[in-house]
Amino acid sequence: MASKSLEAAQLDALVLCGGLGTRLREETEFRPKPMVEIGGRPILWHILKHYGAHGVGRFVLCLGYKGDFIRDYFIHYHNRSHDLEVDVDGGAVEVKSFSAHDGMGISIARLAGLKIGWVTKRQSKVVAIRANDLKIDHVYQGQSHKMDAVTKIMADEGCTLDEIAYVGDDIIDLPVMRVVGLAIATANAREQVKRVAHYTTPLRGGDGAGRDAIDFLLNARGVLDEMIDRYLDPTSAEAKSADIGVGNM
Image (tube, rainbow, N blue to C red; front, side):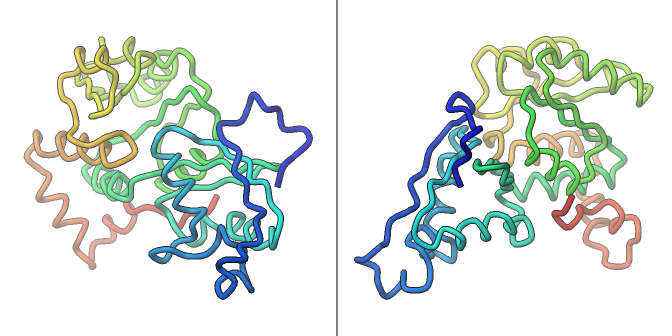
């Protein structure tokens, strides 16, 4: 799946996927070795998931034996699962790991009347797909100065800095975290970020920190248990409208 136009500087990882897997012949007769399953997931899925959890977000898969099998798997991946989002762009595969707990938390937050915004420095189709699936109210990508996006959100919503809770993990988040009403750091945030935070989540970013932040907010308002009960009510049209989508753009 390598593309001649893809510059090496854009890549985070190169994965060799062309082996015949002769020692696994009983498994690789009809599928390539990277697609042999362990625990119901292909070996390649586990590799991308592992490196994705450590911040690697873009891969080039060098295909060989039964390469179409791998290509088709990732092209249709978002129809199969929502814990790992994948975008196939030219020759590269962009992978970003998301927490299903965070997704559930966003539905509960929406039911409680909260508005959700994502502000990120990177430009990513995968983030756009996930944001669409979760019905995120405000999505700003490519933001080197995140306060600019926050200012626009404030204008759109008619709110003040004191009414904003902001979750951050790195120094690029500091200008916003220093001025909002509630600054939240993730468990894996830089120490400089944790020092300005009013609250630090028990879990890491991408592994449930978003849900921690939402639970903290709703619990402080005394409505967490009520919102959970409303979300679980099968007769509630409001709960259905607050729920996430189906994973398609």
